[in-house]
Length: 105
Length: 510
Image (cartoon, rainbow over all chains, first blue to last red; front, side):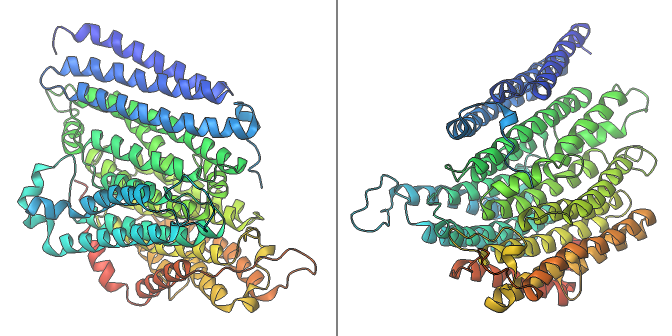
């Protein structure tokens, strides 16, 4: 383990906290835009963890490469997600997730 | 050259998707004279569906070709490993995925014009999503796994929301998108922890690191491995729609255009099972994690029992046939999970699951196709009532519907019968008697709601004055149904050949 070792746990702790905040935000909030932001928070927490672990591993930069891919994928996800939310807003006039209840048997 | 040949199934579908996108953008819209349109794809769903189906059939044929040539005899393929692992397991699944995608494309060729959804981007999206699904079945590295999973899912999110004027479609897409991205983020955190704990992103390296736990000098933390296993399982259980991660399934299937629902039911599920098998057997194949007493098998066994039981009980109470088929797909995920649990002990279980998913793909695509055929513009067949008397009005559609329902119920001489037989037999061979018996009991319960459709098809008359579904005519849907029926009967009457191929596809756990 490198000299980075004892700091690593702090980064991972922060990443876990941010991930937890995103998780709770997704589950508690009913505004779909806020839910989308919470998902982004979770993805960025993962990026922090990946980069911290990459530093610890030393050789290679697998973790950093992984983080870049996550950033790119997250951007694509937001593009599709916002389009879907926009379509929903145009039809229903609100971004409240509780309104989405027409699909019940 | 050999490298290109080995990757040809992926390249064919990927390049085909791009060509199709260009064809869609630069073609001439096919609309009645005098109608103004800015959409170059307007009115061309038919030709694009044909193009998409041909590309996917080429992908399936190339998968078979690489299989026959033998991926072991192509040493160049190690250049793309571990990011893409081209082995017989991958090729079997990419064949299944191409077949499922081609059937969905054909169904869309009939469905989209009939119901006035003039959105030709359906087909490039379908192909790109299939490339993601194929890459997912080949993923031997966490990075490819994540990117492929998202490539597949992003395409599907858009396919669901294709009917832009429909609040139900927007709602279905919204629900699936939010829950899907949430599950993907949870799984991604698990992948990051796995990388942190083992220092590897390739599944083989992770497997070796997990095996080293407890040996002197190993710094791998067992706690982190367990947490990441749980997170990855949650993410993948969502994608295969196992209870209790299934709530999105009926809503998404109901709101989506039926061909998109077909694609989700067959391709997304098969690809998710492929990656589930590979991650569990290669990455978490260590005895301490893959035994009946600890690790993932007991957790998956609970999911399997819940999926079969809950889905079967709820499916019987549905009024909408589309929702019933959605719950049926959840129940089938449960049966396939029984096979995944058995895979901890026997490699044959992997082949049984692969065969099961091929049988499930053709039966489900056929059942959705028959449902499409029973409706037409403004009168889509949705509820059981809509199907009343179709047996008299359109015997061919009713006959096809019955065949696919037989197969889904697991009655001989259809593909579904042998699929279930092999999965339950490997479960019994592995000593999982309880799981096998629960699976059999559930198959019997499941037969109830499949047969209920047939009762409506043949024994009920539509209530006088009730709006009745008028069957549509479409060469595309008919072709898809005939192709699916041939598969169902072929796998049901002569399963030996395909089963031999499937047994070549086995992954070895340890």
